[in-house]
Amino acid sequence: MSTTELKAEYSGVGVCPGRVVGPVLSMPDPVSPPGEARRDASVGEEQAVEAVTRATAAVAASLKARAAEAEGDAAGVLEATAMMATDSMLLKAAKRRIADGATSERAFWDAAEEVTGMFAKLGGKMAERQRDVRDVRDRVVAELRGVTPPGIPHSDRPFVLLAEDLAPADTATLDPAKVVALVTSEGGPQSHTAIIARSLSLPAVVAARGVLEVPDGTEVHVDGGAGAVHTQVTEELRAEVEAFAARRATIQAFDGDGRLADGTAVPLRANVGNGADARAAAEQLAQGVGLFRTEFLFFDRDSEPGHDEQVAAYREVFEAFSGREEPAGDAEEQAGGEGSAAPKVVLRTLDAGADKPLPFLTDAEEPNPALGVRGFRTERSVPGVLARQLAAVAEAAAAVPDVEVWVMAPMIATADEAAEFRRLTEEAGLETPGVMVEVPAAALCADRITAEVDFVSIGTNDLTQYTMASDRMLGSLAELNDAWQPAVLNLVGATGQGSSGPVGVCGEAAGDPVLAPVLIGLGVTSLSMSPASLADVAAVLRTLTAEQTRELAAVATAARGSDEARAAVAERIPALTELGLG
Image (cartoon, rainbow, N blue to C red; front, top):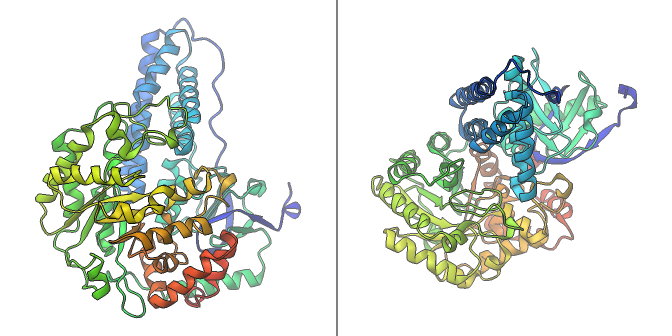
């Protein structure tokens, strides 16, 4: 298609606000499939297996080296992909095919297809791991061929990256100095592309159908807030980009004290997965951790990590905030239990199952994993794993007494489950138990659930998925899979009204500077997000009073749909335009 035949605008889902103009470059085509020819008689089975073993080790080593240079979410994604390269399931499947006479390339290629087929059947977020496996497949086959693997294109000048979707290893190593915006034709609002883009504050649009028609070198305007890509760059659009940059420059770094305009304290915390994440969050003055995802310690293992290994990993996160003192809260905050001067680290216990299966804990053959045994429910099928985790958490917490450690269980649906979790935490010697609100049942029974625990934290990603019956990874369901849906917001409000203690939000919605004040108006008392979002959210909250947030919440919950809700709220917050966030 020639430039003159291009559509003037491609629409998708905006996942990170920002406005830029730049030439596009597309990700190169994937590695071509190997031929069907059988292995040459001169190449023995042992030699072919050794070739695959060397190639997977080389790919894993390369990814680990990149992980060592990365930080935060990027490092975690790279480490997970590196482990995938040497996954025993992949290697065993490849060796079987080599034994049957396949070449090293063909054997690994087909082994990867076998594994991706398994992930596809599992559905949910697990289906997204198909992209991870194919990324590893391409890298290993390229290594076997002695050619450069596909990846981010090189350019001497900044560019807008176009792709069908991005592999985690590629997304995690984007250089924001060169890649000024991301646009994909597939993917959803919770894909790796979206999450990493937000962590880098990189303007991004996903699910922009047809955008791959745009030829390399074409200058485009990307609006990551509106989810639009314009191929006809007018002087007016250029002026908007300049004005946006000027407004953004007025936002100062987060000073570690989240508050509303009337002085109401709103602690702003960070989502982390390991010690490196926590140290990065502390450097950006996050007011503690609102979500410590402990499952990353358990992934890609055949058995649970030992006690000492768990203690060391948890302690590393706690120590990142040791020696810090949080700003004093007002009377309302003190009454809600958020007033301690010690920084808080809210640890989520192992969230396995569905999109995060573990061979020693979950059943990969469940017919509907998203509605199966996951999170706290695994305690029923394999008791003991949670108790051992809590014992390790308690020992790590005791070693860092100036940090207040709270623990919460995922996938809680009833008050009885909440009471059982409290019993387990008390046996471990942990003082502040809480639960995740991720299913409508928990939101609707918040009064009974919070009678059993000390706090709740709303996971808006899963709450949206279960409320709207829409897989959160599918770009085709992006309109439904949106925390702005009034049904979802009403459940957040029900949680806020029914809870007797602090109510946090640790889903992606907490980092949306437009949605954050709505959540506060619905009764949320703290927000946890990617550290990159702290400054934007803090800047908007400081322009609004508690009463104004309640008014915004009423407007949003009364809307007909997500688009109407967001637009109605945005037009009532003048600071969004002034700060370049509208």
